[in-house]
Image 1 (cartoon, one colour):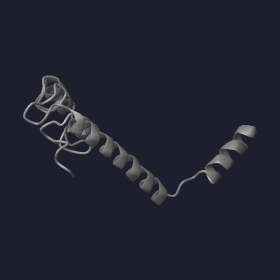
Image 2 (cartoon, rainbow, N blue to C red):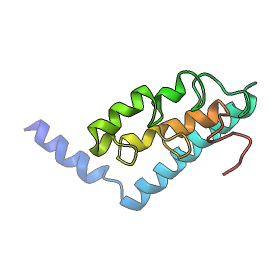
Image 3 (tube, rainbow, N blue to C red):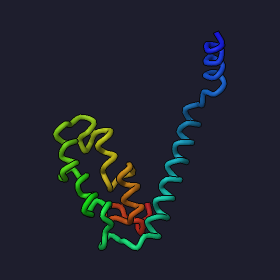
Length: 116
């Protein structure tokens, strides 16, 4: 009974509005973007001399759609393809996970020296 009361109270009290949730998400994205920007500007690598984990580096290029790991997602397809919900996170030129790493290491697809 206590569990039911607690659950009902919590959902009524702490249910954020959709506008508030979107605003909070936008602020988090901005903080991540700013942190990646600062890290990229402080790195000694650059788009002409990429880090090994950038999209042109020895490790990072394996995650590209034509790389060894990226090809697996393309073969599975659906959400794992380069345009899918999961696969698109590995596109270094966009705002996904790979894009933030690319900016943090000042890689060629999304250099930190290039402002948004």
